[in-house]
Length: 138
Image (tube, rainbow, N blue to C red):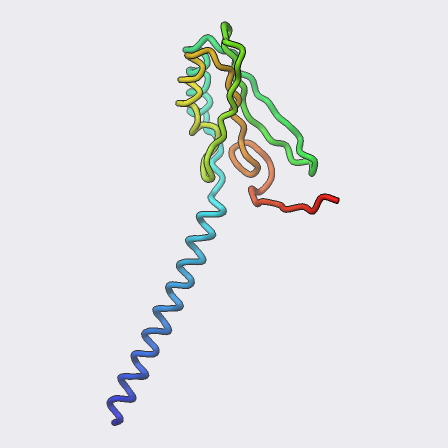
């Protein structure tokens, strides 16, 4: 009888510890997924973008917009010398910046499209912390 209680207590402790570890790991994993580290563009990234623009005879230009809350959002614009008159905005993923879209920009520039590569809030060279802010509009 005493041995059965000891085994039951040990089992409950193991289950409680396992549950705690799982909850903590889930919270940490969710935080990393929703708030990735900022990936700032490097000199090699800038040189790669310049090479894409040169290869496609396109003008590379820094662009920026100031949001209503004062945060400056930055990106790049690539405009081919002999474009088709259309433009594409390439939006990067959650843990990336405009550098991840350079392959698509290269393809689109070859077909005459102008390309805008913005950095989302809190990504790359843009300001802010990347958290979504919900506002009630009256």
